[in-house]
Image (tube, rainbow, N blue to C red):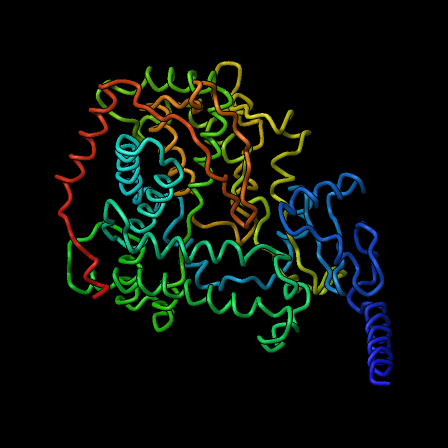
Length: 493
C-alpha cells in the first residue's frame, strides 16, 4: 500500500510539474529559437553534454540552420549564441545579471585599459625571461614551467610578490583555487545549474554531493584570495619599495578617498585570473605538428632581434608573423570556448533565460576562417606579409563580449605575444622520440573546463645555440641586479 501511495504521489507531482512547465510564458509572446526536440517535463536534460559542450551546441546549430539555439532543461531556457551577429543583436543591447559585480569590473577596466596595461609589461618581460631559464634547467617540464611563469606573472602584476624558484606556496595555493573556479564555472556541470532549488536540498541527500564540493572549492578560492592580498597589503603597509602593481595602485586610490572607498578593499581582493598556460601549450602543439611554421617564425625573429639579446615589445611592430602566430593561437584552440553564461533580465521573449555565447563556434566558422581546424598564422597576413585587417581579429570572441568583456585582455595578449616570441627565438621545439628513436605522435587531448587545458605530452625543447643560452642567463642576471630581493613569504607567519 505504501509503495502504491508513493507511486501515485510521484505521478501526481510529475503531472502537476508537467502542466506547470507547459503553461504559457507571460514573457514569451514570440516563438523561441530552434532547438533539439526534447521530452515532456525534462526537456533536453538527457541530451545535455557534460564535456566539450561548445562542439555539441555548434553541431545542433548547424543541423537546425540557426545561429541562435534554444535548449530547455526542466523548464529552464538556455539560449546559445553561435555567431558575432547574434551576440551583437542580443548581448550588446540588453540587461544581464552576471556572476561578477559591477564594481569589480569597473576597477579592473580602470587599471587595465590599453594605456594602463603598458605599465605591467616589465613584469611580463621578467617572468618570460625566468621561464626561458626554467626551460634551460628543466626542458621536459613544459606545462609545469608554463604554469609557474603564468602564476609568477599574476603574482607580480596583481600583488607585487616575489616568487620562489621552486615549490612556491603562493603558486600552489593559486593553482588550487583557480582549478576549483574553472571546474565549477562550466555550465551544466552540476544538475543544480538547471534546477536552482536543489541548492536547498540537505547535503546528505543522495545526489547533493555538489554542496560538499562547493564548500571545499569556496574555501580554496577564498584562501587563495586572502593569502595573496594580505601578503601584498603587508608589503605596501611596511613601506617596501614596490613597482607599479594592481593591488598597490588600488590601495593607494582607496587611501586617497576614491569613491566607493569603504568597499574597495573587498573588491580588490576578488579580482584577477590567467589563461596563458593553455594558449602557449596549444601553440607548442601546433608548432610540433608544423615545423615549417616554427622555422618561418624563427627566421623573422633572427632578422629583427640583435644577436645576444632577447625579443622585446619594441620589436612588435617589426614582427607581424609573430603577431599572426599569436592571433592564430588564440583562435585555433581558444582557451575559453564558451563565455561566462549570463542571466537575461530584459523584459522580452527571452527573459529569464541563461545566455551562453559560443566563442568556439565563432572562431571556427569556415565562412570567416577557411579551413578553420588547420593552424595557419598566414591567414592573418596580406600578400606582403603585414597584418591583414580585413580578416576578423580573433579577439572579437576569445576574450568575451559586451560590457562583460575580459578587462585584462590587453595584458593577456601581450603576455602571450612576448612568451611565444621568446620561446620561438631561443629554442628548437621537436617531437619527443621513444627508445627506438621513433617520433612519439601527439594525441591532442584536452581537459574540458571553462578554461580548456591540453593534457600533458612529451616534446623536446632545446636551446638553438650557446649564444641563445647565454642571452637567457644574462637577462635573468640583469633582472636580479636591478631589483632588490624581498622575501614576502613572512606574510604567512
